[in-house]
Image (cartoon, rainbow, N blue to C red; front, side, top):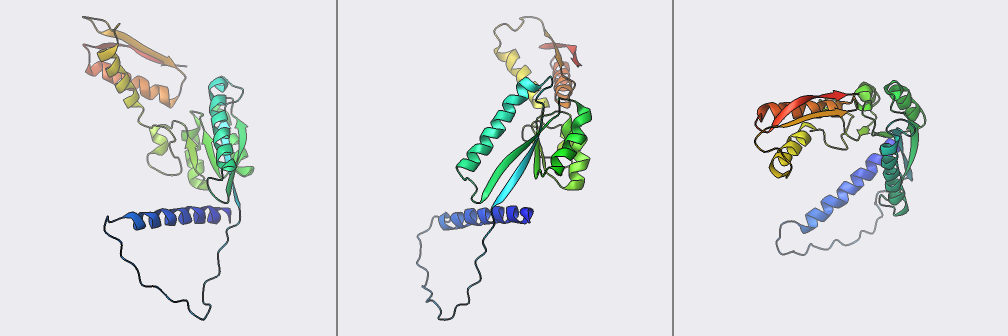
Length: 233
């Protein structure tokens, strides 16, 4: 029933947008429509009244593990956004709440955390945990439960399904853009020799993709860079 109500809210919102576009489109002079006299018989359809809907966001985050300092800030932003939507009633008749599961950045907790959030009523799941998108993709496809990771691996969203990238999935272009900009703009960039570069970071799909992209860029621009290697921990 909740999913039907959410769908109806979206459809009604789309109808209002389309109606506004129709009223403003064309750029031509408006013509008056013929008036329709009210009928003496009451044959109007009964008004559909939607019941209030509460959407539960399952937050699969790291609150006490090695990434907690960064992810607690992300959690605060999520809570602020939910409070803003609820207090200002941005979606009439719809409120949001957040339930949390602490992953401690432990990949072995991805599936138990997902199951816990689902059992406690999560209608969708948000996560900044790097390992979650790949691990949970088969489960959310089976359960048809939308998963919104912060920065998913490409394999999590291609082929498309119930994993939606909240951030960029074209991670290699981050490395390409950064290295190009540094070579052209850094006043301390070496003159007359390539810069020696390498990388270190957590063992995540994000870091591995960036390392591979930096290595490929250096290979294509040997006059600018000498790739010394990257290591993920």
